[in-house]
Image 1 (spheres, one colour):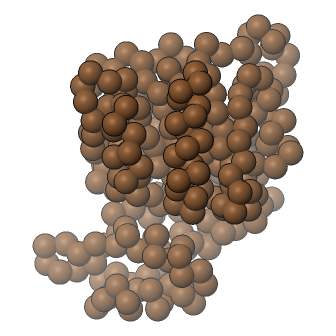
Image 2: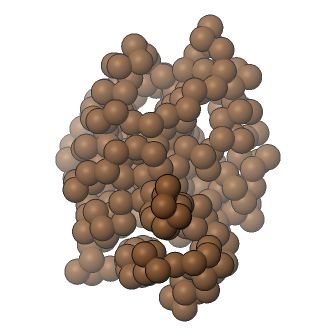
Length: 275
């Protein structure tokens, strides 16, 4: 799949690939990408079914992992540092485990390797995503007049204004003035169980410490107020990546990079400079 992307920085610097989370796009990471373009050649990617990348009726981590591999092959990137947030972070984990020779450094933001339960036994985060996708799916974009009208309608099921503003960045007008979602809402809604899935940690528990040791340094960043990386998830991380650094950023939720931008950048820069 030909993924839409933006490139920032100098050809003579090391490559850094940034992968956004669910409902996001490369646009959400543009300011942070510009910052790191001073030391890296930065590739900001729209994952499948997001942003300006193609839509597909399939959406899972194996496909996104291989989309990233194809992207690196197309751009002739032999090895890169990979930074991924949420869904993008889990995609980065799948990629690093399958193609370790192509990873320079791995930075995973507020997501763990394992699954976040199925819809049959949903967690609070699963229910939240199902609620969001149902709200987007049910929005009558055909007869929508303004973004403000969309915000008003979504507020009935999505009470948090900051979340609605983030989601509404995906609502655009076509050449006829009609609104449409950049997101492939139908596929994301249908494929939500796969998005909530993750690595089966049991496949790795019998590995020796030498087998689990990674050639590339690994950093996990979590928000202090987020529920995505708790004690259970830290145990998963330690099984898969026994040498990983785990850093907590205070006063931040799931969107760590937006809520505490400077502290996030400082944490990543420190990791780059010490490894």
